[in-house]
Image (cartoon, rainbow, N blue to C red; front, side):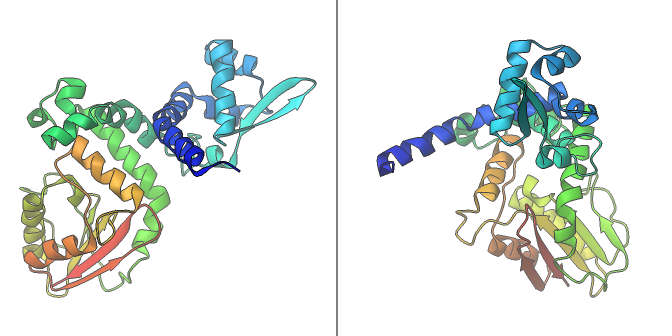
Length: 298
């Protein structure tokens, strides 16, 4: 049995190597490893994978074996030869043909988010997003202070659709929405554009991008547009009451620091924003998934 000191060092090593794990996943997706194995009629050896991908034999074998350790691939040995195939995890979430594929979001994370996170220390010092440091692009030249280009915006939107294909059902099932026959998913330039008439306005992963002041402005606009009995459904990752956990929500909050001007919030903080905008009946529900739900009515 290892000592407490050894266990602590092992945990520290796991944390410090976390970026390597992300890069293995990103590289395997970018190279098309999981799609190749999904299309192959039988498990493939490292040499065959390398030949079809146009990659080095040595690098491919190292990548495949690491994916096995990460449970992204499984391997069997026949006549001394290692043969690789997808696990259920990769077949479900990493193969492009799967309806639950998360490939677009992973590509966005690899090409944009990962590079911004390389400047987390500076983001903590400055308290602002890191597009200038990561890409040389001033934040006031970005679409909504998030996107460098139209292609990046489209990739991000497709990535959100990927995530919604897995996480949407628990969120929409958190409340009985039958009293709201007409639902408007709010997007576009919602600070200026007229809001269409609806019984319920959906703000899915919107408020966490913005400061309290901008959130208050948007919520006030929605409140004015609401019919009596109408409301807003906010979809976000809720922090614990003290702001310390769950870890995923805390990481998302730091991500808002390095990429936007916002943060994740506690239920009490959302209640305060909604109450200040005029909403009087606010319910918060944790779904057990990535995103939680807040229903507020007037």
